[in-house]
Each structure stands twice: as structure tokens, then as C-alpha cells.
Image (cartoon, rainbow, N blue to C red; front, top):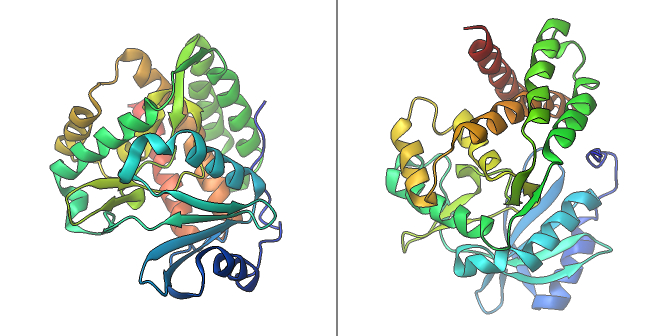
Length: 294
């Protein structure tokens, strides 16, 4: 059964509380950058120690994201070695993670976002995450898709019409016909906004708060909806790095996943007063309906 996202009204630890714990782990630090997203689901501060080392202090509003990310750092992320942050310490009461700061800068918004070589390397890193533990084969995907769809459809309000929801629901329901699927630890927010390009040319993956077991192809979805729109070379480059191409069943997974993500993105964004993200969700829905109608 799908578990609803953590409520945005949960209390989040104050900066003072979190930084006090960081001081006790790392010694005195200075905050050098606030890297938090505007939605407020987590605070992310880059800090510098007296020894000039950089670290990331990240604490979550909701327990679900915290425990997913903590588990990912403990179980799957170590397989990436230096191509992902390292877990330094954690605190369950504060829902705080202290992480190493990987070298480089975000790919999103830079020329590297359109560099095929960067996409090759991102595909290589994602494959290592997916291969960090043996795949689990089960038939839960369809039921999970339908539970998520029902949850978000109830919350989307008049941002999607009844006719649009009916079509999207029919597409989501095709997931029930897919049968057992191999499930891997999927990042579920895999895009250039979570890729760091280092001075050594390595692409490093960050932000593991959404990691759950899903079919591998779901980690292509955000790229299909953003970076790869009208950029087939980038798609081919990434898949070259990953070492696999989607087959007919993978495309069916993506189509059903698209239906859920379009509705979920609109609803979640509106609940968080993020009109830009809501607009992206609307574009996802329009593309889904366009594929269906034409």
C-alpha cells in the first residue's frame, strides 16, 4: 500500500539545533552556502571546518525522506565510492545527515548539461547504484502505481479536469498488466540537478532522499521530461553509459509512471506553492495526453 508523503506541517529542527550537533561532530564550522530548495522539506547547508574541509549538513522535515536517505547511504551509496557523498554522521532525533561535500558544481544550468560525455558518465554512475544490490523480482509495481495515482488524483483539485484524470488513470492502470518486474534501488530524482561535475571530469550523484525499489526505467523519466526533450543524442549517450536500452516492457513502465508523476507533480507543487514546478507537471500531463490522443 502506498504511504502518503510526510506532511509539510511537521516541525523541522532549527538551524541552531542542527548546527550545534554539527559542531559536536566536526568541531567549529562556518556556514558558507545555503543549498536548500524552496519547498522547505529539508535544510541543506554547506559548512567549512577550521581545517578548511567542506561538508554538507542536511536535515529533513519528514521522517520518511530522512530514513530513506539514511538507508540509501548505509546500503547502496557506498557502491559509488567517491562518485557520491559519504555519510559522516546522522542523528535520528534531528533527522540530520552530515555528509562529505563532493568536488565540483551542479550540472544543471551549466554548459555541461548539454554535454554528451557528461550524460555517458551519469549513466555509468546510475548503473552502479542500480547494481549495488541484487534486483528483487515482484509484482508490486502495478498496485503501487494505482495507489499513488488515487492518492494524488484526490488532491489535484481543479488543476486537472475529470476527463484528463480519466485518461491518465487508464494509462496508469496498464501497469497492472505488466506482471512481476525486477526492482532495483532507484534514485527517483535522477536529473542534472542532482549531478555534480568535478574538476576531474567525474559525474557524482547526490540527494538520495527519494530512493526506493522500482523498475530501472523509472530513473529515465525525469530526463525524458527535461534534459532529453529534443535532445536524442543526450539520451543515447546516457544509455551508452548505463549499458542498456529500454525494451517494450520498459517503455510500458515509463508510460504508466508518466501518468502518476504528472498528476503527483501538479498536486505536490500546488500544495507547496511552487508554481514553476506545477507548470512542469502540467507540461508532463499535456505530453502524456498528446501521446495518447495523437
